[in-house]
Structures are given as structure tokens and as C-alpha cells.
Length: 113
Length: 113
Image 1 (cartoon, one colour):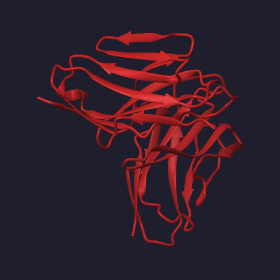
Image 2 (cartoon, rainbow over the protein chains, first blue to last red):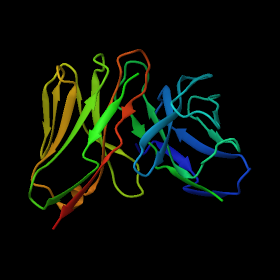
Image 3 (cartoon, one colour):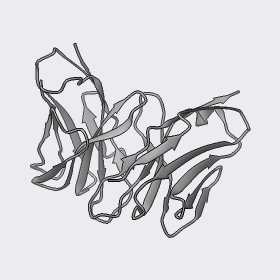
């Protein structure tokens, strides 16, 4: 899991601003994922990508956008349309189709006021 | 789609006692069931997993059991220690192509010295 990095660790934004969270991996994994974590809510899937230039919506995609232009990178943009953006955001990756284990990055805690 | 229920949401045990966390899933085609441990402010880390062709798996003080007929699986921690205190998540992977893991809402385990 040390091969997945997220930056920054803490991020503060004013309401109405878009913000982009970084996720990079050097594990040569095909698949990457974004989760949102709120107290008592577990891990909820925002978006995932199984291959470069392709991605799918998860359970709570509204107000978020992603891109997958490079295998190593899967940035998440939290737009002003997201009603409650304050949360802990976790990026993860796995080898790809047919693989099992999923590795997580260290997370970014976003606070919007 | 797949739905994973996890119980209890909080669990307190005395040091040295055993702890059991249970999860149920809805999709009978799910074939992979990992357990993650998340310490405060850190990333979830895989501690043990089981695949649908196995009924039980052990790793030192940790074991996981799977009952495919009843669609439930459990995490067992024996001889608990204070460092076992954390939030534990179960998950299931639906056997439908590239579908990501579906997580339970977590169990906060406190081991009292």
C-alpha cells in the first residue's frame, strides 16, 4: 500500500469552490477507486476506473468528477455541486480485472466552510 | 446490487477475550470477502480475506469463516490486545466482471486493558 500516494493530507476550501484531490500509484495497477468516508457510514464508492481513459460512476457520484488520462493517476474533483463535501477521501487501486486485493492510499481530509 | 450488513457497530472486550464481528451479504454470486482494519486517521489495511471456495482461514490470532448457504461471514480475533483497537470493515466482491468491493459500515472495536 506504500505505492499509493494522496496529496495533500489536509485540504481546506471555501464553499462554492471546486477542489481537486490527487491520487498517484506506482504499482502498475490497472484499476483505481475513490471512496468517501463519513463517521458511521463506512466506505462509499464515488468513481472507479478499470483502465486508462475509462471510468464508471459509483454509488455517490453526484457532485464529483474524475479523469484517467494516465495509468498512474486518478484525480478526483469535488465540485461546488456537492452538497456536503467535508469528508475523508480515500483512493485505492488493484491489479485489475479478476484480481482481488485492493490497496488504499493514506487519504485526504477535506474541510469546506 | 450487492448489499453488505455488518454487526455490531461497536464492540468492547476485555484484553485477552475473543471478539467476533459478523457480516451478511445479499448477492449469492459474490466470491471474495476481505476484512480491513483502520486505525484512527489512517488508511484501511487488509488483515485477512477468504474466497468462496473456502470455509475458514486462519492467520495467527485472526480467523475468518464463511457460510455461503446463509450468505454470512465472520471475523474472529482471539486473545485480544490493546493494539487490536480499531475500526474493522468487511467487504464483498460481486462476481460480475469488474465490480468493485462493497463495504459494510464498520465495527469500532475497543480492547480494554
